[in-house]
Image (cartoon, rainbow, N blue to C red; front, side, top):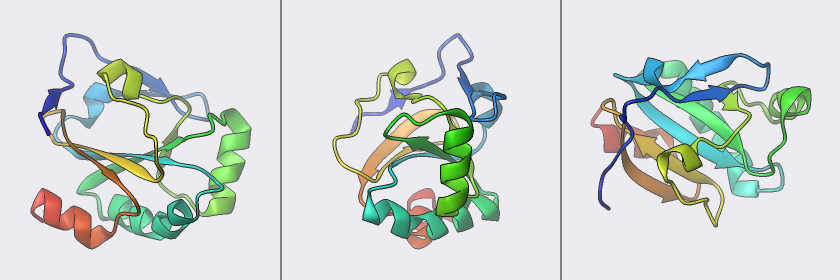
Length: 136
């Protein structure tokens, strides 16, 4: 897969469900997983504990994007019920970066510390899979 640079001249900003804003530039220097999920997706539910663990370890930032475009307090409540501990975004960052909307879930877009899209993966991810990819 060809690398897609996300650097650009502008800093993209994305709203979180609580109304705060995430500045994409603040993630520079970190591996980032943008994970698309839905409540009805059984494999999505299965990978949540793995993604929580990955995010907690600190080497990778995990950002959840609800495929059904649920927003605000409803998204906060849904995330809590599903056990999501990592940050969620209220909007899909993909269009800003030219990513195609996933056609299967779960979908995980992996961005390196330089801001380049390294890979898009489909199906549940494990902490071991991600450690292997990023070399840690």
